[in-house]
Image: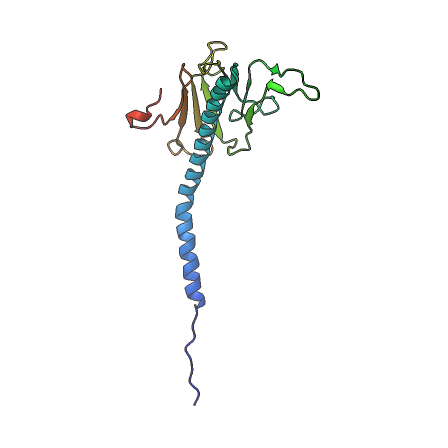
Length: 195
């Protein structure tokens, strides 16, 4: 006598139910994921600017020369987006003449960041005072008084991408002594209060 084995597997109706549940969960989660991605872009840009300022300060002390951080320049020293920056010597100094090649002792570009490195056009960067995009660090690591440096960089997301209140604005504050810190202006924590 032949015995029938029960069929194992999923029916078409069961598969359709699983696909529908996955689609509903994805539709619910997508807006939160979009906000998270945009806030990550804000944080990435703010951290990049903070790191660039710290690099400029460290290079000024290391090279015993004035080093500048310029916001809004491409690595080839042409005007770029606000999230791009270049760190280089305020006065380019060539190395002593060598027999073959004479590398620069203090080059115009020490390090740079282009817009394609973790940021996008949806991130807005504004300095205070607005027209100032350059900070010069002295050989002691302090901020030089001339040209007048910016003291605050506000990094936010375009309102065309996220509704007001969804984005998380971050500030990068620069002290006269050269100290750099990132803070959240909307935080209720006293340790992260921003100017």
